[in-house]
Length: 411
Image (cartoon, rainbow, N blue to C red; front, side, top):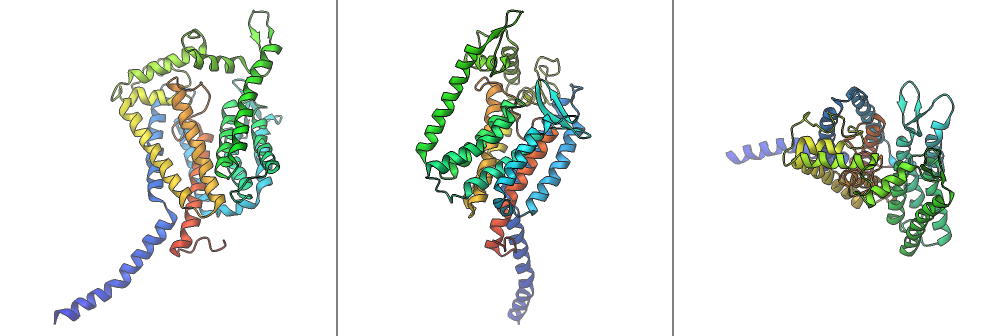
């Protein structure tokens, strides 16, 4: 009589197995595991490198970086559980919030000027509002372009969109902060491309952008004036901004400038790391003060010097997993607004990664753009966590209806 016993055991096990499958289905509808694993591994790796970079610099506190992580986790969880689609109808309020955040450092009493840029406010602690505006700029741009259902073919509407997308950039240039302004521009460009703008409109905009850069340099040459010490002062671009571009274009002839010196020290640090590096905490370029802004702008050089080519490969692999899994979420998203949010964030990360690593290797002009999840900065870290929350919200509220997990019922 074995068969009835086997059947009864199987029958008894079935509800438990079904419940487990439902639990796994529900969990999978909330968490994109490749994305989650990439986030955790990248954050842990970045904190390890940041901890090493700040050990020899009294101006930086690792506990403050951990505070940024703690605030970031709260922001990430809040946005993850919030239905991102509710932001879709807030196009102009999101633009207003972005402008207020970006211009807030100009307010008296709370505004702070650091290294020539009025980019900070003090509200019990020093905060960079333009970093937090990245979140609202992403949501604003995605909301604006999602109104056209992927078919932005009318020239008048296209010009209107471009004009609105330029508002955050024009506001940030009042500080001025060209690095963050370029991030805003890249977010806008990605959303325009993925939002269905005509190719010829995009090409004309690109040509106009290049022509504007040329015009800025030409006007600067006309309006420049000589200071008593014999140096030239320019109206539109700061001297250090021009020098950084010229160093990139001709790295040898301007090696005596501060920017040229910074680039050479960065390349020395990268080259000295070899295959496996000098060991965590044993960098010499940053520890001896040769490498400027090591925990922030040039932290990639610290990583390359201490962990070598192997550490660089690990970092790039983690970035590839993060970006690849985010692209998967965008491709499977059935909502244009959600897809544009993810694409904008991916574009922002890619631009920051390529620019930061490129400038350390001499392949891109030197800017103040930090490395996502690695560079020191509590505001920067908090914002990156918030971006993770937005992507997770898109995934959970789009996948849950397909698996019957109970999310997204108010589509």
